[in-house]
Image (cartoon, rainbow, N blue to C red; front, top):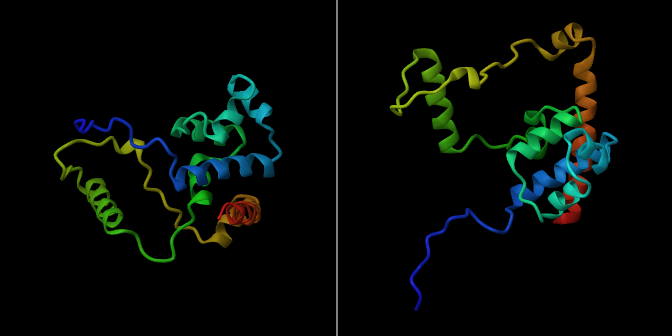
Length: 164
């Protein structure tokens, strides 16, 4: 028997979440009228790069998601929210503990884990304005955002249904 090897890669087969994110990127590009070539040109990538990325020949990285999202006019956070809508049940125990710890750190400046954190890298802003007030102040973009979210969600559900 050969000795057990230490695992150096997380995994070679993409997870369901990675496949879902790839699908969301492709769907968002299509819905918003972008071709692979459009995005490749704007990012300075070689032709067929996105085809290889979306087919799984190239590993999807967070940098890819951020760059593609911004090129198509979507903030990365929005893309993740569309790909992974909020669960109907509450947060996991780990997420709740993390949120509490980060909130406490924001209030006190003490890092309970013994390290440091640049809070400028994290934004804790949550709009306290009601949606009706946001609509008045942003020229109706809240309505447009809701319509786009519904369109993206429908497109995503169709794609995911085909995958399932």
